[in-house]
Length: 476
Image (cartoon, rainbow, N blue to C red):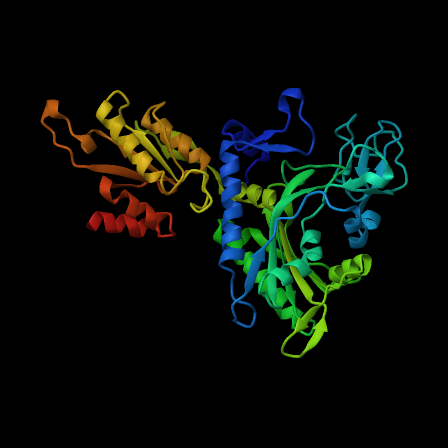
């Protein structure tokens, strides 16, 4: 089912995933705040990437172990960094202005834009005249120190890569890494986008997950490039993106930068069209050479085997956290009709998030909140499971509504504590010490002893299939 972005945006606001920044003051275009559930989902995406990319990296194209280390570089850098990288002179988009309404548009997106005075018209079709395209630098300017002059002007970084390039020698000198090796970073970037759009897809403040993989100048860069493309594609599938929504786009040679050997984008089918999700670029040794020339500091590497120095080449997989965040929400969102408790039909909204990145792993729900023994047992279960996972307790509605609420925020499993769990002395019913586990996707339920919950969720949240765990519980 094709989802409507308006419904997804409404869910994000209603359930505390994403809020418009500065909303009480009218907001500010291109900036977003992540709410309680959003910050958990975003952190889980970043943690999964860091775990798989840095702490447990894949083998290299030659099958050998990859050395991978990380850095966390400053957002504000010496402006000479951006002069050397080419951002000051060339990091720009062509723009046009409407002489009638004074609005500004990207020249290459006029066909997609709408006139603010006449939304049914395109810019230039409303009676206003468009100016000739001119370049608009996307970097945010700021000033360091007490005086606001050209000498103290610098920029908010528009990407995280350059900090890794100018720290290349520092990393070599302070670690035991040898080429080939990877240098990874997670962090904020800022771009003064002319027309931020499509919710968090294109915004002015964003977060990147980026890695620079330094290889020998004579290495088979094409083989290495293809290996990282496939790793990135498989990683996206592992966190819940359907393979059918992913495709590859190889940049044609005439559109590549002069130093680039090749760039391939992993594309994702968003509700607003197929768009770039993850770019994997073979950048040669351009960046290291630029910083070596501009700074006068060497950026070469001494190879012990050949006893020669060379400037490494680099493969750069770079992805926006916010774009993955939006992609997993789009892929997981579903509306379906299900049977209610009375045998009728009701609509269910569900986020089928991969359990690894779901903001809440387990919800503990008491069937009767007026029974102190049930509530006490539910709290004890929540406290025990919270030692390992993000777990919530909720008793603010009937059980059916509680299930729907957790379905809508992507919680993969619910635990229900009922009368059977604790027994009923008034009726002479003894406790069975079991609780009900409900699976979000299938809505199937199994009874499990309280003492086995940790082990069962260790399996489920560790990647085991619900059907296999349910079969084991039934036979046990």
